[in-house]
Structures are given as structure tokens and as C-alpha cells.
Image 1: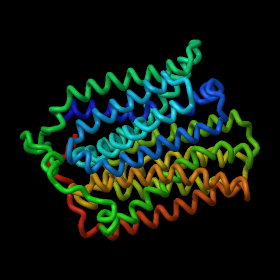
Image 2 (image 1 turned 45 degrees about the vertical axis):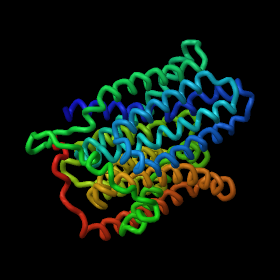
Image 3 (image 1 turned 180 degrees about the vertical axis):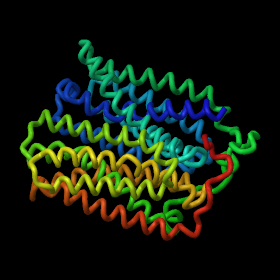
Image 4 (image 1 turned 180 degrees about the horizontal axis):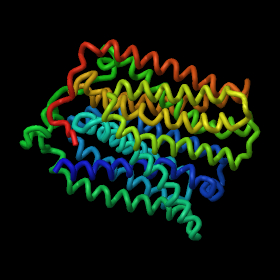
Length: 406
């Protein structure tokens, strides 16, 4: 039963990634049809991000009331409807309207699934699940590209992803009984889900959460990580072109390798977690990122910088899954949904604010500050993570009985 549910969760993580890069791949075709400036993609992206932040902050309340299975089914259904709306839109303002349920659906399912896996599955599954998200994010643009190459309009690409989401919604609905009962990995007995036991508990507010020792520090850690990842992904190729003089085509290939490095790195990290705990996985990731950033400063032309960008991607791989997976152990299973929801919200704030902020620095000062900017974020991330480790050390308990170990 647990393995079948795990397969459904894997499918859900792929579903999470499928729409994430669609807008970027389709926008060159979309903005001309809507007769709007190319920069208007940022408006849609911000609306989606705002919806995601709101729903992430409400994830604790929703999950306590409905349970992870129902929240996941409703959220994926909302995303499917939003994507269908995108496919039928013929004006920019309709896109903005459909972006609202798009963002609201994404935030709830992301926070709920991450908490469920952190509670009931081992760290390697968290890494592999986020690897599945990466596969989804890589597959979405491929589907859109295939549709456009076949002579269809961008609408068909959105419709195709919407159909996939509808099918997944049906699968999740049929799997709902599996979310309520689980099999203890040690005794083999069916047990009521810990989450179901906590349904009547009182939701944890933001003000209450940040008062818990270590929470402010882990939120800063998460903010800095997402800022590093998104800034490196957005500005890495521009840095290679403008600072090292390589061609735009070659820089684009290495930018794609950055994301491929994250995806492959998470697949490999799933095996490494059999030897290292979450804390040391984060430390390892920080070390690899530091090595990558150091290569930006080496002499020898563009070769070290290109290798450095790939290494930064590999270093990013273990950080996000390990921070999420360690949350129930550090702060308690009864508080983890609320804290993970806040982490998701903080993540989107970091991805929204910091890449544009560096864009201002690059425009007003120099894009050569790219590695310095990332190094400062990385340093703050590492310091805050170590402070979290120290502040929560006395509370850390062994992982809960019933967590899947195979």
C-alpha cells in the first residue's frame, strides 16, 4: 500500500514541475498574439507567485481540515482548470485572471506533499521526489516545443498539460483511502495517519511559528538558498556572455546544464542520504556551491566559469530537499506543516525579489559582481543553517515510527 501511494506522490511531483517552465517556453509566441511588451511575462509570473505565497501560508489550516490527499487532489484540479483557462485565453487580462488559481493550486500542493513525505518517508525519497519535479520542469517545455514544432499554436501546449493534470487528479481521487491509512514499517500493522490524528489541532500562525527557536534562522536559510538558485539560473548565462565573452548559444547550453545538474544531483543525492543525514547533506551542498563560485574567480578564460556554473547547480541539489525533510525532526511533527508552508512562501519571496535585485546591481554597477553576490547569499545561508542546527539540537528526536525505510 505504501509503495503504491509513493508512486502516486512521485506522479504528483512530476505534475508540480510540468507547468513551471511553460510560460517561459511559450511566451515568445504568446506576447506577439496579445500585442503586449515582452516584459509582461513578469506580471503573470508575479501573480502566480503571489497566489503561491498565499496558499502556502494557508497550507497548515487546509491540511488539518481536509488532509493531504484531498488538498493534493483539489490543488491539482485547480491547476488543471487554470491551464485549461490559459489554453482558451485570447487576451492578456484573461491570462492574469487564470494565473490566480494557477498560483493558489501550486502553493497548497507543494507544501502539503513536502510535509507528508518529510513525515512518512526517508530522506532519499525526498531527494528523488524533487528530482521528479525537475523531470517535470524539463518535460513541460519539451511538450510545448513539440507542439509548436508540429505547427500548432501555444494553446495546444497548455491544453496538453491540462489533460495530464486532469488524469492525475482522477488518480489522486481514487487513491484517497491510501492517504488515511498507512502501514507501519516495523510492525507491519495498519495505523491511522499521524496527520489524520492532528486534524482537530489548532493551526499554527506565522507569529507563533517564528517565535520557535531556530525557525527564523531556517527561514533565512531557505530564502538565501532559493535566491542563490534562481539568481544563478537567471543570470548565469548573461554573466558568461557579458563578463567572459562567450556566445549566447554556448552560454544557453551551460545555463541548461545548471538545471540539469540540480536534477541529476538530486537523483545521486538520494543514494548519498544513505550515508549522510540531512544536516550534512546541506553542508555538502554548500561546500560544492562554494567550490563552483570559487571557479568563477580563477584565471584561464571562460572554461573555469562554465564548469563553476554546473558545480553550483550540483551543489544546489541536496539543499532544498534536506531542509524540508529535516523540518519535522527539528521542530516537531505537529508544527511541521505550518513551518513548511511558511518555508514555501519565503522561497517564492526569495525567487521573486533577489534575481531582479541583482539585475539592478548588474545594470547600475557591473555584472562581474555575480559571484560576489552569490557568495554573500551562500555565506548567510550557511551561517543561518548552522545556527538552526545548534538551536534545535536539544529538541531533535529520532525519526518517527512508521517512516518508510525501504
